Image (tube, rainbow, N blue to C red; front, side, top):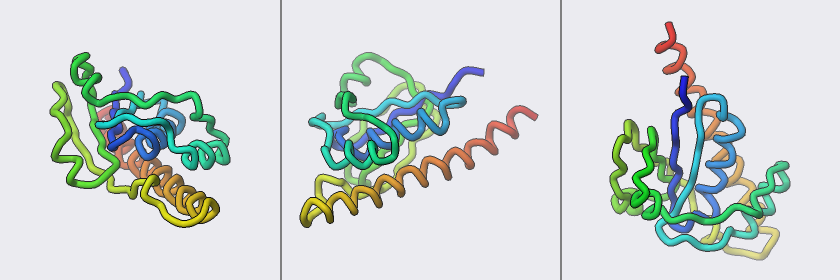
Length: 150
């Protein structure tokens, strides 16, 4: 059985989509291969890098990628999951071969206010919310795999 390809998209590919890609590849790597991209790629959010490192995951060497480059390359994905708001979802290019398109709304860690400790705390909460959503989605899709195998 081949792995399903998943693309996570957010605005800058500097936080939410990077976390989702990492968690899916680690937690669901037996069924999925994940990538991530953004509409306006920017350098990784240092708070995101720090909280992922706290979870034992070093994403400091990850590069932000453009969703339009993936589109131009003709990459095919089974799932395209936006991890931002509906406004961005409407601007997402249509990828050929997509079977499912999902939206998971998460706040942008770049918008978190407060001092460094408060921003870290909010970014930790975001990390846990994304990880929990990945785990829930893996449970949802697992039932699809088990039904299709019977």
